[in-house]
Length: 239
Image (cartoon, rainbow, N blue to C red; front, side, top):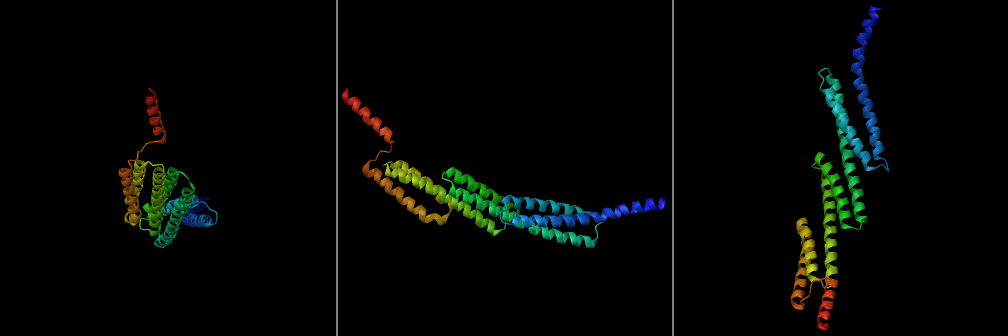
């Protein structure tokens, strides 16, 4: 009985030493299956983010196993090879999440009518891209995606203020039109030199409006205000 008892005690640590290898290989297979599911058609962007997080958990567990002095050299090579595989999966799914999320949010922004809604959706897309850039700052695809979203935001803002300026010009509210064109010009100049042609065109529009103000003495007032002034003048005439 004593012999059987001692043998069972010796077999315990051996089983405990083999278990991490088995559980890690099982974890890797499960992770690879989740990776395939995330890459399947119809999967949501959040699925990629979940796999990215699971990869991080796997890598942390692998680091803890490598910290043990009892791990053999052969075992270390196996664990490091698995880590390289998981790091590749981790990068793939972070980039996929950022790309798909930004694409979805930018499409949503294009469909929205109000400027503040467009900008809100575009900023959410930028948040996704910036999150991925924190992990992979040298990724050119992320940088191009971020530049495209910022370009959309600039064009949306400029189009908004130019439209308001054109409406104000049509109504004879030239000072209001100049202010709107200035707002559009602000966003263009802040966006960079690639918008210089559009900025020059808006600058010419502002100069034309200023010339109209000087020659026509246009009054920048609401139509309702003009009506009130005419009624007030008529009342004073009756007196």
